[in-house]
Amino acid sequence: MKTNLSVGLGKLKLNNPVMVASGTFGYAEEFRDFMDLKKLGAIVTKTLTLKPRKGNPAPRTCETPAGMLNSIGLENPGLDNFIKDKFPFLKKLGVPVIVSVASEEEPEEFLELVSQLDKIEEAAAIELNISCPNVRGREGLISQDPDATFKIVQDVRKITGKTLITKLSPNVTSIGKIAKSAEEAGSDAISLINTLTGMSIDVGQRKPKIAVGIAGLSGPAIRPVAVRMVWEVFKKVKIPIIGMGGIMDTDSALEFIIAGASAVSVGTANFINPKTSLEILSGLKEYLIRNRITEIKELIGSLKA
Ligand code: SIN
Image (tube, rainbow, N blue to C red; front, side, top):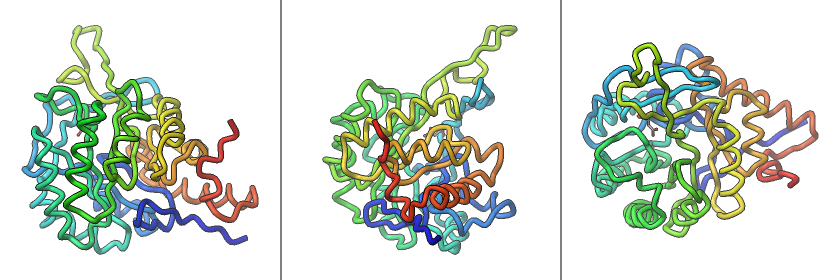
């Protein structure tokens, strides 16, 4: 039986819905010996800022029950070094590359980042990371405020015709409202969820296990929250959703698709088994065949609720 796994994110067409999440896959080169990167639906880069960043002090990761905490603090080589040193490998792969960007302090930095990326043909899409919980010195996150979300997406929309994806934080009261703001401002797609803020304590030392204290929780522990948020957003917006948060295997990817995600991003699982995304891709094909479904699109938002 023939199956069709292609999906659309705005005008960006993916051969299949399985992507790898920002910050868990470096700039892909590190994974080249483990898997056939060309089979991925898309690759999302580690978030870039204009200038290089060293990130937060160590320790900046620790394991938690069914998950992990991270406070990397957006360590990255900066946009220019990325374009010079990392992008040449990525653009040869023939897989859509989604470039994730964030501002360090002022939201206006997004405009500079996006105007430079707009000139690069091989950058298939831009993800606005307005939801990183690990950068200090800022009053709340842009994605915690529907007006601030609307403003930055609207400003960026004016300067690029590329597919624009807005990445949202789960650390909010009404995820649907924030997603609607991004849609109304011109975002082509929504990705969610970024990490939930959390804390873990070394009771011997009575110190946080992460140097800066509060960090972002990911992994299977957060999956039910993420699936719930995808479902809420699916009911609220018409633009496609990229679902993520603790996807470990085919069934967890299916949960997101059935709740309303057009594509899924594998994150924390990449640290355990770098081939997880491709195993999920095979599993999705088998699921379609077993259930006599020809198009994966038929499954999107097919929850019987
Ligand atoms: C980090 O670099 O601290 C994580 C990035 C994010 O959660 O967006």
